[in-house]
Image (cartoon, rainbow, N blue to C red; front, side, top):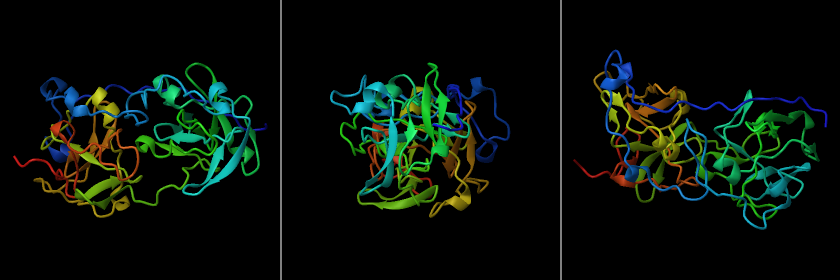
Amino acid sequence: MKTSWRSASLVASAAAVLALTTACGQETPPASSQNVGATAAPGDLGSIGSGAGSGLGASPSVGQSSAPPAGAGAGTDTGTAGKLSVSTNAELGKVVTDSAGLTLYRFDQDTAEPPKTNCDGDCAKTWPPVLADDAAAGEGIDEALLGEVTRPDGTKQLTIGGWPAYRYAKDTNAGDVKGQGVGGKWYALAPDGKKAKQSDLPGLSTRNDPKLGEIVVDKNGMTVYRFMKDSPWPMKTACTDACLEKWPVVEPVAAEDTEGIDLKGSGPRGQGYVVFDRPDGLKQQTIDCVPIYTFAGDKKPGDTNGQGVGGTWYAISPDGKPVGAPKE
């Protein structure tokens, strides 16, 4: 096929460490040796189980499946795509499928400009990359949107609209979309490279959970949490390293891209909705200076599997309070 090929390389993020920000605490961060606080214990992390998403700052270990399941569709074993086509799903609308009818997906932790894949190792076993070698644009696919990215092992992975394309190992039949929304990070590819049925939700908003009441959700409708071992005044985080794999940080969200969130905060400076500049290079959104996260064990919008994990993780209310946490 005639196409403009792109290439990129995997960039690994540094391990997360403790940090302070000036808006919610001290004017200048002290040396890291002075900032040491409690770190997440094993019981704090929770169990994400098969198919759950991974955190920022580490190569995803989504699902931990060692190989595609027996009987997986034709394209899964070889990784080749053949002639791509567009299928219509009752819930998602138009999605891209390979020559075997298997749904193709994109990963939120990848990038499209420039194309870059961040799914390797165990992640790539659960989410097999679609190879670009024989990919061809079928009906409904714009050939100009097809490209490739070079993976760490040197193979060429298909991109659509710049986004690296994957299959899901648990999709065993043509038309399956079991990977949709997994971990709040994986979504079926629409023909233009965007997410199929992309959410119309703001970056942060609220929903009324039948058990928890009003809680914060992200742009994908996934529940947002706070960690009771974190501190807002001064701002500190105890979720580092392996903790981030199960509790991905919520990236910065512009104030105007929120709905129902308390932007003022209760701290002495009245600046509660600020960005936490972590020394690992990640930027994390806060509410009332409380760092916020999603849970990799929540597989679809509406899940609250992270609620109460380790007695330290709780859904967060619009004003930054922990929902359902025991009163101190």
